[in-house]
Length: 115
Image 1 (cartoon, rainbow, N blue to C red):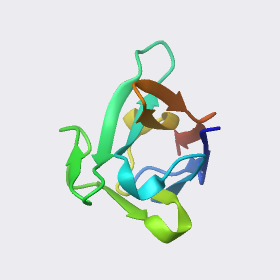
Image 2 (cartoon, rainbow, N blue to C red):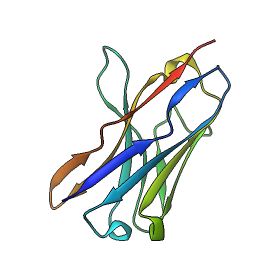
Image 3 (spheres, helix red, strand yellow):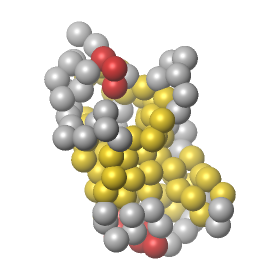
Image 4 (cartoon, helix red, strand yellow):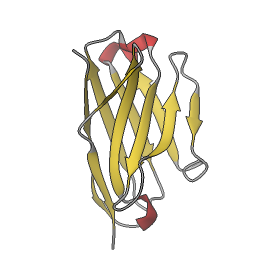
């Protein structure tokens, strides 16, 4: 079965950085686009970044220039490097894959930006 497991979140000061990981299993990882979303308290889940099977990346305007998504196909893992964090980046970050028209989500990893 498809499984996604996020890790790497934590508490960081404004201006800090983290590297989030999304470990995938249950499907041929290299063939699918992977997405990162985030959900802040009281807000809707929003798309943050996408990496296609070809390695093309797409970012939300709010994170362009600060976040970088990558993938390591042999490790079945996608990454989100988050830099220059602000309190507005505080959220639970989820990875997602659409597999046979079904969306699969991990449990999320909490990122808290606070001084």
